[in-house]
Length: 147
Image (cartoon, rainbow, N blue to C red; front, side):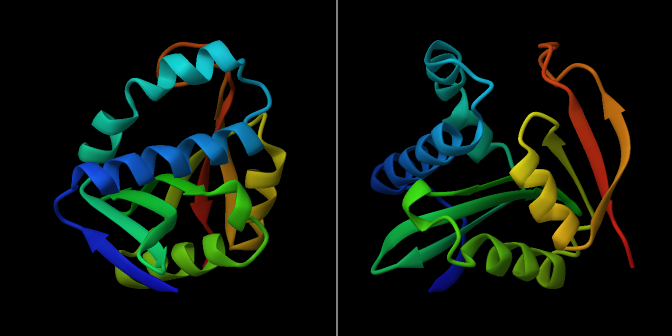
């Protein structure tokens, strides 16, 4: 597994990023309807381009997982559904904590496996918002790294 930062995004890479995002969301965000996922998907390329650091995990030149970081905040972490449970998310997050000093993140409360993953990786819930950033009724948990 190779981890690298994408400084530019080719059309092929964008297609792989979107496919990775979509398979991950379908596997983990059961609270979203297919219609909601399709709506959100329209804004995903903008989100990828909007982060300060876009890091990918590659195997055989194929993107298997990705994370986006702004300053020291993890903005996104998605692992392709076929790659879940193989340690790729842990590898990426550890890399981000070491190289980019990630110490905070936000996670959907309705995604308990993600919350458990982040707690296992040393983060704890510090606050809760009943709405997501778009004002939708999807509670968000803010988490900080415990040192």
